[in-house]
Length: 263
Ligand code: SAM
Image 1: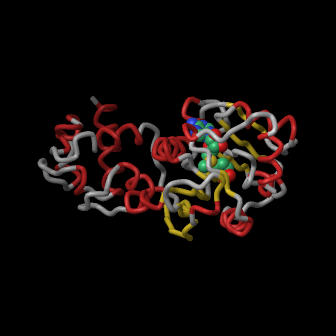
Image 2: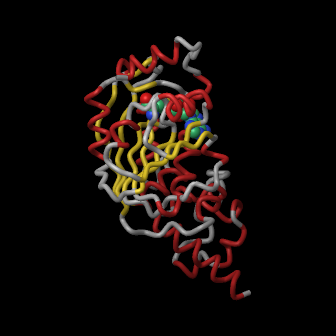
């Protein structure tokens, strides 16, 4: 139980750090629903970002023999590994600075995301673990519109393009504040993403960030090279990033790469 683990580590002077977005899940039903959504099989390679005190990690460790967790807080990482004996490869690191964790082999990715770096972590996962079959995230409810946004809306941006390209996105359920210790300021929700088979090419995440850098400007102001290929893929020269469908962004990226290879 979370409360028992929290009591033990608190007796050693641990206090949850808001700078790391530490709100620990304590509702058993929500935990079990999140684990079910991951649809983990014995042979799956599973990655969890931010295991905290292991609310999701312990049940997952019973379902697979190949489980990696990445935790920024050294006290939590060593508590999970050395004192609680979590059956996982526990990496004590800032995930955003981590490169060597077997990204391309991961089948399932799960995270109760630290909200202060939610977008950056999701983008890194699409960049590096885009082959995963399933991703399940707890996100801030306020971020949902941005995650699921469609073209020609204010909320549409790099994250919505990546989510849409990855596959089917579902808002599964809301999670009230009292399901966490300590309670966060906002309501949360769980989303599941199922891989639809589109390949997100290497370098695409950087490209899509550039495309939306100045969103009211024409795309060619953000990405000069686009000017040479836009018309060949059926887009006008004055198009803005927010008008372009996710699949068209892939076409555009590939056309730019092809052209630069041939030049
Ligand atoms: N998974 C736990 C749960 O559901 O109770 C904890 C979730 S808590 C919202 C977010 C966790 O992510 C914290 O344990 C925090 O220390 C960790 N974290 C924050 N930033 C991180 C980063 N950049 N890399 C890895 N872990 C991070």
